[in-house]
Image (cartoon, rainbow over all chains, first blue to last red):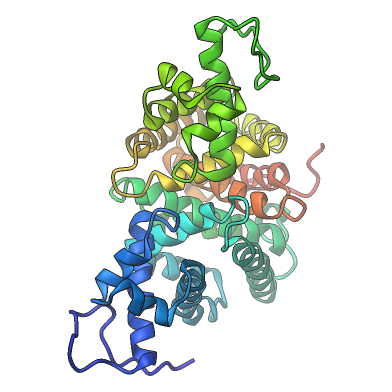
Length: 207
Length: 207
């Protein structure tokens, strides 16, 4: 849970005053997250990640023997970032907040969009991760919706259907938003969808 | 509109009886569509596409000098497939039908999901294509919604908001469905969303 973070996310190179191994690993993972977000997993190289943290490729291999092992750590890191948020998914308004926060981190959004699609390719190392993540997220969100809104939402939608649709809309909005941040108001649209699913009015929502 | 299709999509190799150049080009584009759908654009090679149609790489370069030029043709080909469908988007029920049809072509769905995400990477040749495609699709669907349902849908959602959400849900459902076809009933979920946006009941929808 609490990870002893002692170095900045991707701070300047530190030839001297080397951070201990754990901090170094975190530094590498954050750099990889940025590299993957920019170029996708397949198009990224360990050499480029190493360069971002001022290591030789050999030095990086000491911490992460393969690009796949680094990817798994990047995905776990992203889950850590998300968990604090999705953990509190007690009602639909929280979902809008999560989306709101995502507008402030376009790199992480792009990373997620890219990797979740890349994971569909045959034998991609992130394939199992996303299969399990989506299944778990659907259950978790459906449980939260049932607890807050009962067995039926607007139009007779079940919590399971609403959960799958909300996750889908979130993912699809991130894709459209990444192409046109100015034209797609993600939090507002998420607010519209949650309002509609609750059977409420959208127009007069207070900000 | 009608394209004189004389060869099967990706038929068996034809060492003899070479098809004319146009048919050959179509054959290559269909093979590339399959190759890209399986491995994504960046991870596909012209050599693999050439092999699928029984050509040497040199032979393929005669028709498509670069992988990028082939990609543009693949995207146009996909638009041809889609256009007949999206062209008739007169009401929300049609949208469910489009999704229904997509369940029968997982390869094309995966191709679209992969390429639309890959396009976000810096300098990706499909970037402009998707930026324009999403913008045009939002306008087109919003116009159709306004014509059919007026200026407000359920909960006060505007046709523009509903259009963006519908496209997002479609894209997000394709992603979840590609990971778990058995667990995500795309057409049914699209039906739920369109019903909710119309302010109707979902439970008793006739199939």
